[in-house]
Length: 147
Image 1 (tube, rainbow, N blue to C red):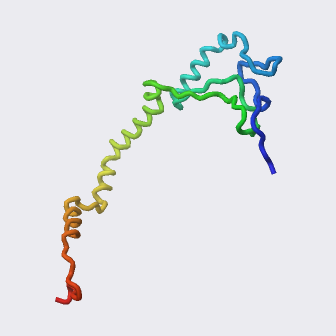
Image 2: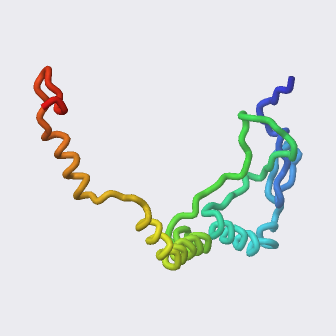
Image 3: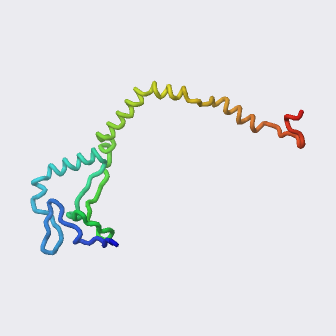
């Protein structure tokens, strides 16, 4: 039977751009942001456009294959892309475009299906419902067919 332990700092390794110190924690490599700063910003904006969120590292990442649970959480933190830029992402615009094209070019087919379906007229339905409530009950001992 397998059982997984709770997460500790030993279940994580230093993320890219971080190195392990003598005390055992991960700290940023000096001048690392200056070397790759523009590519990180581009990656964050591309992630925002595609998925609507971006992640910020805490300096750690879980060791591949590690299945610890609970305990210490040093995984990257996800943040939602807010504002108009998240609303008008490429993914959202393309989805709206495809739905619009399907409705525009597929409307004759949709209309034909609606016409073929046996959808009752609402006026007839109202009359049927009111006639159900306005019926007089048959006298006791006599059925309507025995007149």
